[in-house]
Every structure is written in structure tokens, then in C-alpha cells.
Image (cartoon, rainbow, N blue to C red; front, top):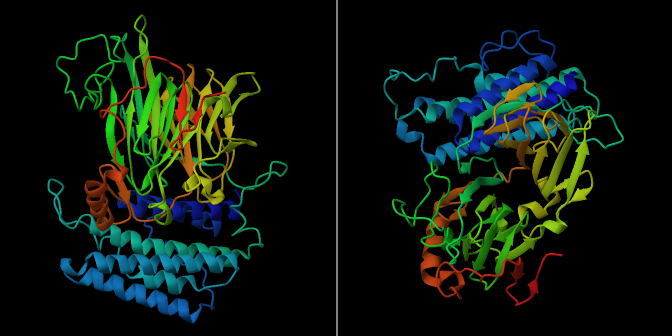
Length: 539
């Protein structure tokens, strides 16, 4: 791996550290910073990484030029950090924390900009200002292992803030000290064309976490992914299960130990009328049917690979019911519902209803050298020129820079697939949800796992000895504050309170349906009726 590749990897870990800190994941932020420095010391030619991220084992090369305005900024950061360390708990309040973060992120942004311009800086000056006087154990938690600490959340934040600034500075210094060519810093992380040999290092496996049964964690710009798999029995002729509902918590039936659930439904499974504001739902129904109804007057029955994309925007009510249609056979259901955040500028747009039919969604079959097949279904984004239908106009996914993709991968046993590189800064996660595991890069991963990829290079997946299914979700972070409560996702708590107030006052347009859980009759034909009355059917 060339020094330029290591610098690109360092920058990727630095971006991930900032992302983790944004969501108060302090330990993960520090771990990403440690990885950034490991990549950095390799780039500048040191044989081993420092034992502590804040105390390098050997001085980094010094350069004489440091912009005066930037030096002043670093001084401001240093003064605030000292005040936070030395003052009482009350001084480390939200306002001061926000100011520290703003200054450190501004410092990092300036450093990255100067790196693109190939400017030279004095890494010792910046590194010393932000971290050099901080001993590794200065912020150690003195609380015994058996007890908690009211300050435990603040301690790693202070450490992470110092290290973010220090890591950005040293990364820039490495660029300058190597005399990197024009393409080695800003352009080293640009995706290369198919006709060129990529200089981007392969992506590596980062965090691997076990998946629970229904709700999976995600990274910005996604909020979470709900995975519903229900072995519903025969229908009772009224779209509900031909089975006893005794012992179930009707209205809130989420018992993962059962073969199927009623969710919030009482006679028909599903989610009766409920509101949303400030984000989007992307619903992929793989098996079974879903009946949609909303406060715009839109309705749909869809399934078999169809995707519904609903922009809640300023506010909408909708119901999502799972009608059991067959009285002479079981009614299995499988679907993903992904919550995708909206940028602040789009949170209050008009709601928008979109149907993407399975017939229009690209499905590509690839064969590896051993002729083993992988099917790629492109629900969002593109694969090698095969592009999914357009998302709603105000979606984050509609912006080209979002690099957003949602793909379903179905791999034959022992099949091999190489995922292409993505734009620098794009976050990718793989969700292994069927099979007996896979090898991602050089790491074996169990089934029912989320794999977060580090770096933006290509990565190879080899399925296990059983057919393997993987959901891929990727996108560039929106990078804005997230305030979330129940069905509303905004940027501030004040906006959340306003959402509740608006919903109580307006009902987000009211509810034009009879009952809170409408089902669209006994005809299994898939259809959509838009708010303007226009009707469409697949094909």
C-alpha cells in the first residue's frame, strides 16, 4: 500500500470518527482515531504506531509555515479545551461543548482544504496545541469498575475532540512532508473509472455487530431498518389469521419468539393510522402484500419486490396493513422498511407518494470465475449503469452527491462478488440476514450480522456453503443534528415539540378513510391510486 493509499485510509477513519462523535459514540470515535493514526504513521514512514494516540513515540517532521489565522483558531480551541478540563462540571455545558466542536471541526475543515492546496504546516505546533499537553491518563475515569460516573460521557468527548484536531493536523503534515503529487491527497479518494486501474485501497471490515430480530441499526443518512419476517397462517376470510389471538398483546404484538406477529393490528396484522414528519420511509416488500392508505388520499396494494417511497416532509398520516389473502394456504410476509433522513432544508416540504414497481427495478445476475451466480436487485442507486427508478424529488437520494444505494444481494453457495469502490466519505453497511455467513474482505462473518465497511475502495464478498442474502445500504452522511421522538425526526427538540403541537392541531391533513386500518378488498391485484386520483398498475 502506497503512502497515498495510507493517507486516504487515514482520512476515511477521520471522517468516521467525526461521524461517531456526532452521535455520541465516544468509544467508537476514539477507536477510529486510533486507526487513523496507525494509517498515518505508515504514510510518514514510521515503523510502528504510537502506543497512545496523543503521545507519538517520535516527533513528526516540522515545517515552518502555519497560516496566522489558523494559528489563532487553534489557540481558541486550546483555550476552550483547557477551560473545559479545569472548570467545574457546570462549565462543561451544552453551549461550551457546541463551541468547542464548532471550532475543532472548523480547524479540521481548514486543514483538509490546505491539504488539497498542498500547503505546508507545522504539525508540531498544531499537534502540541491540541493534544501535546494532555497526558494519556489525565481524563481517566476514577470511578471504580463496579460503579458509574456522572461525567463518564464527557470524558471521552473531550479526548475525542482533542484527537480529532490533532489527527487532522498530522494527516496534513504527512501530505506536505511527503511532497505528494497533485492527485495524492484531494484526488486520491476520487472513484476511478472502469477503464482505469484503481489506486484506492480495498475497503476493510470495521465494526461487526449481531442483528436483533426486527430493528437494525444504520448510519447517517439512514435512521434504522425494520425487518419483518412473518410466517402467517391461512386467512380467516377477513384478511386476518385463521388462528387464535389469545395471549397476544393486541395493539402491541412484537414478540420475536413467535412465528408471526400482529404488530399494532388487532384483527389484521400491520400498522394502523400513525403520523410522520421530517424523514422518508422506503418499504421493500419481498413476499406477501402490503396495503397503504394515507392522509393525502393515496392508496396502494403492493408486494413481490415492489418499493414504496414516501416523503413525510411537513407531515403525513398513513396506515400499513398486511392483509392475508389466501384462505387455502399460508400467507408468508417478508419486507424491509428503511427510515431515511431528510436534510433540514427539506424537512418541511410537501409530502410525496411514490411507487416503484418490481418490473421497473433492475435485477442483474453476475457469474464469478466458477460460474456461481449472484443476483443484485437495485432498489435505489445504480450498479454498473443499471439505475433504479428515480426517488422522490426532495429526497436526499435525489442529490447526486448523496451516493445513496439500497441493494439486495442473493448469492449462490460459495459465490464471489466484488463490490465497486464508492465516493470518499460514503458509509456502507452489509446486513447478512440469510445463510450461514460469508467472508467479507479477509474476515469471516456470521449470519445475522451487520458489517460496517471502512474506506471507500472495492471489497470482495464470498458467500458461505448455503445460499446467502445480504442487504447493502450506503450513502454520504447528511451530517446534521438529529432530534427524534416517536414518529417525528427533526433537527432540534423545539422542532419535535412543534411537530406534536401541529399534529394535534391539524392532523396533518386529516384522515379520509373509514377506520384506522383500511384494507383494499379481496382482489389481489397490485395497484396504486395517487392523490390526484390517477390509478396505475405494474407493467
